[in-house]
Amino acid sequence: MRDELWAYMATTLNAIECPALKICGVEDHVHILCGLSRKIAIKELVEEAKTGPSKWIKSKGDAYREFHWQGGYGVFSVSESNVAAVKAYIEKQEEHHRTMSFQDEFRLLCRRHQIEIDERYVWD
Image 1 (cartoon, one colour):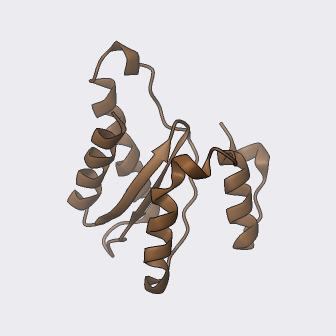
Image 2 (cartoon, helix red, strand yellow):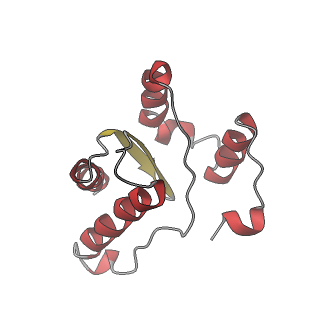
């Protein structure tokens, strides 16, 4: 189901002029590398990326009826010179998360980019 979901998300992003460059994830999160249209705010991009695919996956049967995304999200900008490295990182999510949890990964990314987080508001 993941490959279908990623394809659906890519179509959703492309429709709002935020071309999907790479989408991949594991059970508890997804990484999206995409362009950002000058016509849309980041919060709208995230809303579109979650809402349509959520409705779509719920239509795929009773097993997915309770599906939902967490309320929060993280957004990081990527320079053109780092796109290939970020794509490679996203492609290896399953392998990566054999040794590091999503929470630890997010904490590391935030520390690496000097972003302070209040964990009372980060996790659902």
